[in-house]
Length: 452
Image (tube, rainbow, N blue to C red; front, side, top):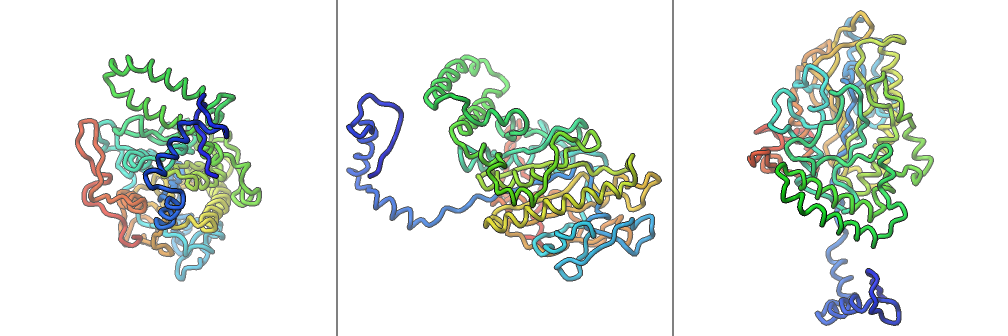
């Protein structure tokens, strides 16, 4: 027997179903829509397609391309550094010896060795928007998450389209920028810290929650009339998002890693979210990669993660290579676990993962046994999303200082991410503060042809 339960109603039938809901079912039958007919229609439509998603991992501060994915063992000692390259499962491709797990799954990744338009100074802006921070738009260029939230919206009312797992860094330029001219309505949902307790109802029934919503709406009416900045639109969006989260357990469950198989959690590894690396970087929290996987599985379209600190001019406890080795080993474990996890769950072609940082590092090792900022060339790492992986794009000279093949710009990387989400960067636009349509990447920039 099909039962439909709704709000409390004094006019109920003997089985407790409200007369209003009974009449709704009867109306469907009178219209010729029967349960068998509905089931047949559902079967004919086939299984629903999974939404496409992006996990964007920002390596805070500028990871060293020469010590990770573009080693130069034959360069002079002051360039090559102490790490040795190892073979991968893709013929002719080598990466750092401290990432052996990733070496065994190189066929599931694509490395871009020739990003040429990084900014000079630290600024997370380019890593989240694909735009040059010195050529910003009025109101600010939006992040990819804000853009996708505006264009595609939520796949489920209980899961925001854009979720940020980024920790706030005390060094301002390391922080994820806001939604820019798209406004607060397209800001990321940030569930870290004490706010996680607000994802579930604390002893409040759904009826009481909806009563409070009606009261809030009545109080807001007069404020809306006096609003001259458009803030109420954003508040309305937040209210809708909050109502969806509170009346669904999907987001809270996705963030609850205690629901995960302990063996899976162990595969990723764990870090302390309260320890900010070198004081002003992000924490080294590999379980953020697992949380990101759970979020995209629940329906989030874009999840952003900031991870550790990679700004190694030198190190007070030894050379930067000691720290680098430590970070690479943890990253190798966590990122390989993420790739395996997505494949095992059938998500590999639906979720694109992107990894990059502010810029590359200098070929020459400095007097403090570290590497300094180097915007002339940097690396990016992409996986999943149905991309053509198992390849290296671009090349650098014998010391890793200049791109010699296939120079790539950040706009191309972001165009590739939008493409993997089903968004055509040649036609899609968002409106700026003046109402002018703006393309998602610089005019004429297309996805990387090697990947799509």
